[in-house]
Image (cartoon, rainbow, N blue to C red; front, side):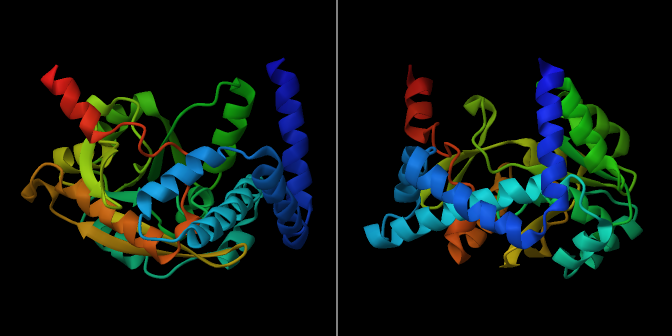
Length: 297
């Protein structure tokens, strides 16, 4: 059964590899309509998240963000399929970095860095694009896919330009081995953690929010500079990356500060263009109030 699903997956990949972008984005328009208007995919989650984040916006404003979000979501989904076999020439044209020298500066000093990414605009192409902007070893943490054939295909596809995919269970092992070898580690930490007891709680969009602890944990252990990766959609199918130093001496900060500074950068992107963030995940399924109540019990 797994192999049959893999063959279907390959057919989809081949289809999106050969179609031009204008057809891909036309299909995205249709898919967005189906997800939003017909299926109502996670609409309740999206709506609740937007109301939590933007208490001062009108219903009309929230509706506009909601509608635009679904188009962003399907663009990312279909562009990610195309990204598995995208050429380096196409990536160079459509996924440009403005200032990768900020990363190279630390590599020249013999220091590894953490590239802190969020689920904003097309983060999926980052696994291909970043290898064109940065020369040293690049690692990214990922959760293995249940289908072993698809998992192997995804790993091979995203590693063809030099990116090393790290199963999440091996994160500590690779940091220990490569954190002092002028490498880059890509970490995405803006989703809700599965274990709130290990989370770092910060102020985010006006609410106390649980963030994954990885950026905080590894940057402080190895005193690695943390650089936020802004991803801006210039127009459909075209993106611009700007690297933004959060701090280059995390051990000098108090616990939680790095994560708060990271959250501030994510919030900055969201305020600039709210529809480009991934509103369909349950951002606030864990609440500070419940955590405090749990402690009291």
